[in-house]
Image (cartoon, rainbow, N blue to C red; front, side, top):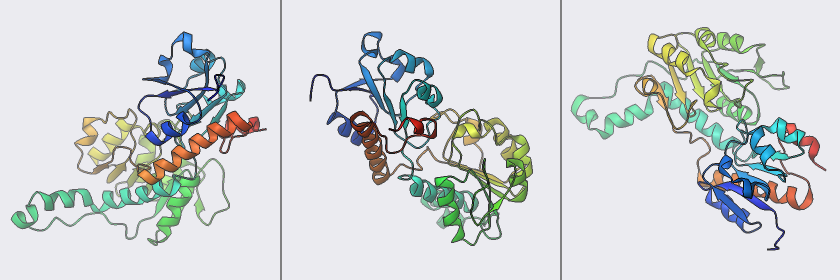
Length: 318
């Protein structure tokens, strides 16, 4: 490895495959937090790989930064607009995780309406033999209509899977798409039109707390909310109130506003099915994400052309 090889900044707690791929190509500086890089090291950093908050201030500190290769499809923790202004490429890992996340979205929906985790606990604790069969569930997928908030790659994969359940699908997105699903002109209109709302949009200022008390009221007392997008999209306080007072029937969440800290009030609700942000967490999918992140990093530094630039930075591709 030449002395002048680009130097990559990564957080210490990082996917091992991504670490190995990057270390094989470039010298790496590991830090506990990306903004903890010292002033003496800052000017030597050419790239950032993995996850972590990358603010405009950090981008400005890293005066020789050329690329940020995000490990994940969501990049709301990165100031991509500022990076683009500074000529810094930002990439993410779309497509390789879409099917896995969509699988979990459907599984979480089933868990939520049919209470499968609670039924398994009933068996494991000996209650089936001691107290009898698990109670009939008040909710079912039969007869439901589903609205998808955000019909991107993951949203499309979810819609395809729901077709196998004979469930009608509607959607709301920034733009109408050429798809065989009903389009609603606003999120609240979508919630009124369906009884099952699946959140599949990225985080960021444009979507923060967009699923609020009004949207939950529009969803109604038979309503089910599923979130595999970002926790910040849902107003958690409003959701807790809606679940507690029957404004909606149930919710299934894989993401939360302040991960890994989940409000105890949410944990205590019997009509909430909760997962610790595992939608893409299989070895095969995380390996594919690591490879794409590493390939983006290498392609940009060696050839000046990223494989999957985020929209804000697409114009930088040579």
